[in-house]
Structures are given as structure tokens and as C-alpha cells.
Amino acid sequence: MGEVNHPLAHGDTIAAIATAAGPGGIGIIRISGPEAWRVGRRVFRPKYGRQYNPREILRKLVLGHAVDPVSGEHLDQVLAVFFQAPHSYTTENTVEIHSHAGPAVTARVLQAALAAGARLARPGEFTYRALMGGRLDLSAAEAVAQLIAARSTSEARLALAGLEGGLARQLKPVRQALLGAAAAVEAAVDFPDEVDDILTVELAEALAGRVIAPLEHLVQRATERRIWRQGAVVALVGRPNVGKSTLFNAVLGQHRAITSQTPGTTRDAIEEAALIGSVVCRLVDTAGLAQAGDHLENLSQEMTRQALSRADLVLLVLDGSAPLTAEDRQLMAETSRLKRVVAVNKSDLPSASPPWEAGTLEAGVAVSALTGSGMEELLAAVAEALTGGQPEPAAGEAVASARQGQALECCLKAARRAAVGLRRQDPQPELISLELAEALAALGEVDGQGAPEEVFEAVFSQFCLGK
Ligand code: GDP
Image 1: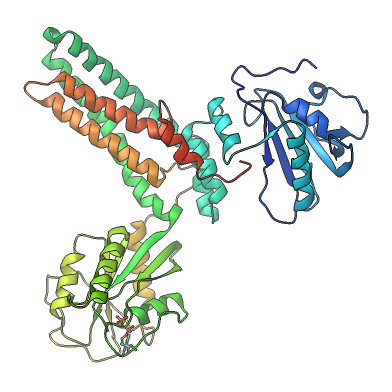
Image 2: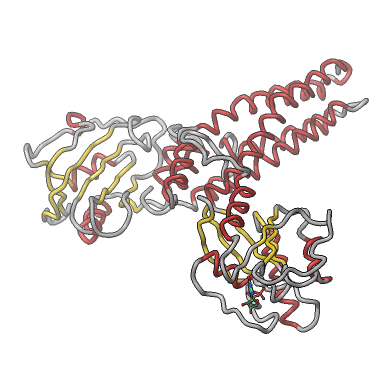
């Protein structure tokens, strides 16, 4: 047959259903690998011309039948398309069989491909091969995973921007600057007598301008934008009986948490999703941070702390009809460093006097969870605080995922330490060299250059079968 394989084609031939499970639409069985054409020819018979050379029908949808390779039984009328390495998604020889029958038939066509010599692909394996074939970089591969998992159009747009390699493109000069600095410092290790003050100052400046500044920008934006991509965790915090559960329900517009007149009855943290502004929020209603005492209350305090530690925003609820208590003050102090919005609840009741000591608290939003007055203002304040007043990201804007953001932050910190080391009176090239190596390793976790095995695994574990 004289099938040509791309030099990077490797391993065995894999097959999987590449479309989402479930009835309706078409199901695509994708076969990729050095034997893909051979497998394809065993399971696909074109309607016209029984003998065919895949090379002659490349990238054309050809009508025919999917057949059982052993019995020759027709499984379904299908369209098939052959791709030649490296001009396919995986960069390998690939065959796609488009079947329009239900999932049972699609599964039988896959079975046929397996019987014809392919192995079932692992999750993400097609994309992994695309990465290995140089078709995608790691951030693009991750974007594919995000695109598959995207739950909204704005998420999908963000993932698509990542897919177009925007992030990797922005990181290229950062990597080059780090490599340049690492090489210069390495030379200084080898030739210690020639270390020159001017050189170290220049290197520190290069790091500041070409590594630290752009990374700071990316990390900052990643945090802001992550909210659009993943939604935000909003924790409702307040002492018992200030009206957290009532407020929680008012936000959700439904009545799920049980409210009661007895303080401290809502002991479990309850979580629900709500759309605030245009941000998807996971609203967590925490039990009040009750004074230490019985076992359950310790548990609820622990839960409050946990909710606080992962919250993107704290909604601190106070009771405007009662004077501030020690507990209110404690919560105010505990949340003072977090991004927070203060709701002064029960505005339908006469307000307690003197209500709020001037200066100890930012202006709260007066609200009545019971009557709903002030709710719009409160939600607007939450949305504004979450997004920093920024509009939804535009299409084509590359944004780091949480994992990428963390790696970039590690890279940033190591680069900062290297710059500090370079500015010292007596720079120690060995130490600086280590910091730069650490920065490069962290960067590798995002652009995939020299990324360790675990990173690939972490990225590909997010995939579902057939991608
Ligand atoms: P939590 O312990 O902080 O969750 O407080 P709850 O939501 O259980 O509310 C405690 C009590 O305050 C209940 O009797 C609610 O009906 C009442 N409450 C909550 N919000 C308001 C409000 O805005 N106005 C008034 N008048 N009562 C409220």
C-alpha cells in the first residue's frame, strides 16, 4: 500500500469515539497511528469502487459502509475521511468514520476498528499525540481539555484563545530572557574572575523588564480572569442569626437552607450556584463562627475557616438592627484582608444606634433579606468586587488556568529571587543559577518545554475519551 508515516508517528494505532456520548447527531470514530489506514480499509468499504487507495481520496468525505472486519457484515452507512501524516490532528495517519446512527451502532463501529487491530485510546491520547507531533503546545492541549469541559460560551471563548497558543506566544520572550540570563550566569560560574558588576546589573534589569514585569501582568490577569472561566466562590460569613441563610435564599431565589429563630441552627456549610452579574458564583453559606464550645461548633468554625480559605470573595453579613457584638468584630478582623463586601442586613427594622463605628469598616450595603430591598445594590457590589469592574474577556484573549497561574507565580518568585541575587554586592552565581533553573522549570509547566512527566499527566487526566 505504501502508506507514509510521519517520522514522529510513534507507538501503536489507537481508536475511540471522538464525539460526545449520547443520542443525536453524528458519531465520529477516530483511528490514528501508523496502522490507521490499514485498520480503516478493513472497517470501511466505499460505495463506489471496492478497491481503493486511501492516498487517492485524502481529506474527502467518502460515502460507504462500516463493516465488521471478520464477518463483512454492514454495520452502518457512513462517511469516511482519510488524513495523511503529518496533515492530521494527531500528525499521524488518521481515519475518521462519521456514523449517523445511534450510540449502539457507533460503539459497534469502534468495536470493528478494535477487531481490525487498533487499541482503545486512553483519555486525551489523540491530543497527546498532537502535542508530541508538535501540532499543539502544552497550553493549547490544556485549552482543548478546557474547551471540552467548557460550560458557557465565555468559558469556551477563553479556552479557544488558549488553544490558539496565545499564552505560549506571550511566554516565548520570557523563556528566551530566562535562558539568556541562565547562560550568562552559568558562564560566570565557570569563569568566576570575569564576573563583571556591569553585567550583573544588566542581567537584573533584563530580568525585571523581560521576565518579572510580563509575568506579573499575566499572573494578575489570570486571577481576575479565572473568575470568568471557573466561577467564583463567595462565602457568606456572619455570626448566628444575622440572616445569612435568609440572604442566601434571597440570592438564589429559592428556599433551600432552613432558617430558624434559634441561633446557630445552620451548622453545615451549604453550597449552591447562582449567577451574580454575569459571573457564575458558588455561594457558600457557612455556619456562624460561634464561640468555641461544643464539638459541633468547633466543627462549624473549622468549616467557616475552610470556606474563607478558598473564597474569592467574602460576603460579611451584619445585623443592622442590633449593636455590633464581639463576634461581629472578630469576623470583621478575620476577613479584613480578604476581598469582601459587607451586607448590613435587616434594614426593614429600625437600625441600632450607634450603628457602625466610623473608620472600622468600609461602607456596607443596607439590605433586607426578608423584603428584598437593597438586594440589587448588594449583588451589583459583589459583581463589581469580583470582576474589578472589568468587562468579560474578549475573544482571543489568552488567560492562564489556575494550574498555569500557579506555575507562572513560581516562575515569577524564582525570577525575583534571582534578580535580588544579581543586585547584591557580591553576587553568588551558583545560587542565582539555581533560581533561574527553578524559574525555567516552572515556566516549562506552562509552555511544555522540558515539562516533567507529571505535568503531562495532570493535563491529560482532565480529558475524556476520544479527544
Ligand atoms: P443565620 O443564622 O445568619 O443563617 O440567620 P437566618 O437566616 O436563620 O435568620 C435569622 C432570623 O432573622 C430569622 O428569623 C430570619 O427570618 C430573620 N431575618 C433574616 N433576614 C432578615 C431581614 O432582612 N429582616 C428581618 N426583619 N428579619 C430577618
